[in-house]
Amino acid sequence: MSGKRVNWMERIAVIGGGLLGGSLALRLAGEKDVRLWARREASVALAQELGVEQASTDLAATLAGVELVVLSVPVGVMPGLVDRMLEAGLPEDCLVTDVGSVKAVVHREVAPRLRERGRVFVGSHPMAGGEKQGMEAARRDLFEGAMCFLTGREGAQTGEGECLETFWRELGCRTEWIDPLAHDRVVARISHLPHVMAAVTARAALANPEDARYGGGGLRDTTRVAGGHPGMWAEILLENREAVGRSLVEARDFLGEILASLESGDHEAVLRWLTEASELHASGRAVIQNECG
Image (cartoon, rainbow, N blue to C red):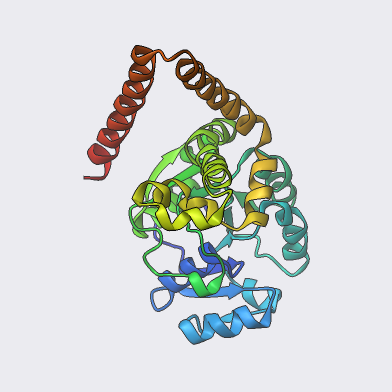
């Protein structure tokens, strides 16, 4: 495979008909020979209605002759599903990737299964999504402008890694190679912690849901992602619990600081705490603007 041209991936199987898998299949439909496998007939019917003609519940037919397989299912399901894929005839000369939100467990549980059977695995994590899930929420432009992590670093030195990086860039993603454990630490801070904090704000601010009618943009913006699928997020948080736990301890310490300052009536401390947060926010926005334009 390593000797093939960078744009060789024409036959692609997307395994999973949720938001990411459905959006990926929609984006590729009409440009590539894309097949979508979904567990439920309803998801298959909806995908076909939206324009993904080769949607099916037949795993073997979906995998026949493909050059790239994208696992777009919950991380906990991946090991068993990979075993099924191997039994169903996963082509030997194909590259397998995933779109999971955590990476250490994928490289520990999924990559060896494939490597032992002579297949190549390189991890992916496009930072794209939304509160709504399922094929019904899929959209073609979901990946435009998103950061896509590629794991682990050894893949960056291979032809397969080059092919995969080009694949995501052609979908509009920015890309960066990262170690799986480093990935999990980063996303714990910039994705998983914000979700927990949004949930905390929702629970505290909306303890009486009737109060929502008094809220403005601040309440809406700070609680938006709390509307994400609870089952999916419970799995993500538990799979990355060590890194998320460390980030939550840091957040608890910051909350302790502002609480102590408020209890003592220390205006200067409150101002300093808020100023530091404002400056960090501004610095983060500058980084995004410099990178994304």
